[in-house]
Length: 292
Image 1 (spheres, rainbow, N blue to C red):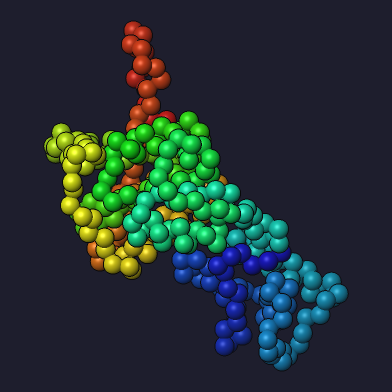
Image 2 (cartoon, rainbow, N blue to C red):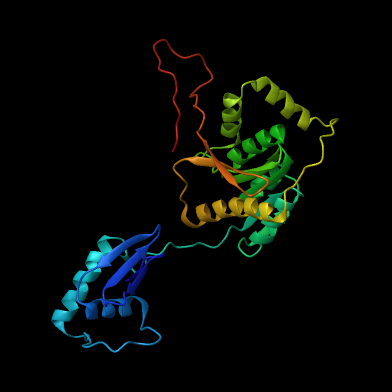
């Protein structure tokens, strides 16, 4: 057994004991101080400088072992103690992580991922790239709407997870991570934006202009290095958490990083899934939003 990650078991000056868990969750441990001290030693090893207690609880004393066992079970029930082999098994990083884009966010993501992924590739995205990658991180300047809709189709076809970042105005927009069939994708983000827009036709026209080969949008006003670091950390952090645990958030979120580094979270709900493009049968109920 061991202390759960993020928990501290420590002694107060008056000889009582406390537990501090994530989120400033304090817990007072009642029981013989000597027994708690021995339990902590079993969990964490002897302290660097051991105090001189009035009476040590020695191993082999059945009564003392019973008290320690009761304390351990009580703390286990509170999530303070876990089995020694119950730590999250962190699997090695992905074999291939592909980073697209030539801006500062892409460069920093590639640098940070170099010590985690077995191989970090750089360069433009096509279907061959998507097929050969475990994870794709696409860091654009202005929003590449047409390109990202195509990339989303490739990722769905080849079961490749991907996430993205782009600039709008003076802010960077990050994520959410898309695991095909399990979490929100770019089409969901796109649909949310259009539904919330007062003039969706203006947005569509602007995205079309950005993607036109003959257009020359203004230079991207990249923020400072600190703000870029925030965006890169959010991108890679979300990928790392999912890769290590296979867990995804209950609600997918796109994060807006302002020019001063302030973040705002925008929930992204999946679009309704239509079961068939054919006309519905008479009396059939409309398809609802599906999330697995």
